[in-house]
Amino acid sequence: MSALYEKGTPHADGYRDVDVGTVAMWHAEVRLVDVREPSEFDGLLGHITGAELVPLRMVEEKAGNWPRDSELVMVCRSGGRSAKAAAQLARRGFNRVMNMRGGMLAWNEAELPAVRAAPPPALGVPDVLDELLAWMREQGGTTPASSPHVLLETHGGQHARLLSVLELMQMAGQVAAKDPGALDRVLRECRDRLAVARPEVRAK
Image: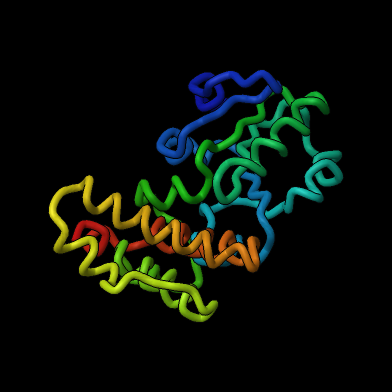
């Protein structure tokens, strides 16, 4: 048995939350179960070396063959689906099940190694906001006169930059009134791209 479970934070649903840094130290000694869909597992965020793909809808079925005392770390994109999977397993009598808090978003933001089909894109915050603007224009929405690069790089102070981003998000929300699900999909993609952006690009 590893020390990973003891380092976790107990949850009311019977599992423990563990952070990505701790998982990185001990992942070779536990069973990593990634509950995302296959396209996500092999997608932009990648997956952890040695992780086993078991989509959430299949977890309870597959778990029927797993020892109840297995040390299991459930993984997903942001920690939500993996928490559901961990709770399911705890109810089935698994007594050393864990949820990786923050999921693969947090793993990538911590710059931990991930297996992916292609290198992460060289994008920073302005580049990702450019993509959001392009989507807004496609939807026929109003966009700021200045580009994200101008808004974020020439406006003085963190407060001014935050206001610029909030203004952009408000405009995006107005556009999304036509198709609420569309904005959610675009924002998820933008969030994933930021998580894997190269450090030197992020720092600009």
